[in-house]
Length: 193
Image (tube, rainbow, N blue to C red; front, side, top):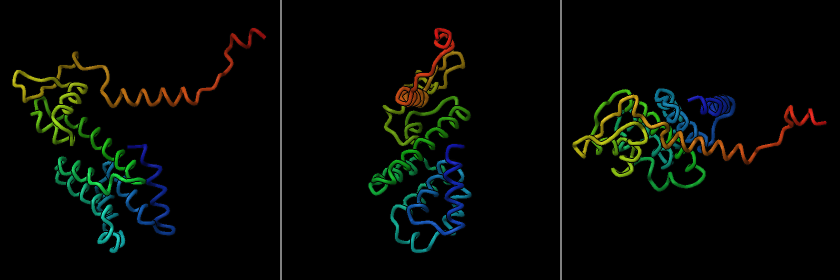
């Protein structure tokens, strides 16, 4: 994901020039995982200070997310992201970005790989309860089949226009634009003068 690239490059440069703080190591590991770059995450783990790997509970929990992602155990991934010591500032906001990035990749993978899936598996794969999973699935082009425990992918013509993530991104952008809007003269305004 491109949005993480500049921050990753900045942290990698700092690591080369003067080393990183424990927070920066955690942040870089989170960014690699959010980008889906497991290889770089593994290399970072190997070159991280031994003390950090053995004593920093947050760093070890983030590493557990990586290990679970490698095993494709997404229930464990989301359980690891929900532990209390990762839900405190300043790490919390980055953990939420990581969770969203993983969920977006999961949605894309499910669209590509499956035409039919159990609701229970869908819920586990997104780290959410079954009711929320049904809502998320329906917003992403799935519907319940005759078997109430199974989701089937909608045909192309019956896909919803936007999913929840797209909707929230649009609202965020609109709010940002409204908050930062400036009035610019138009051609008709210039002609009036």
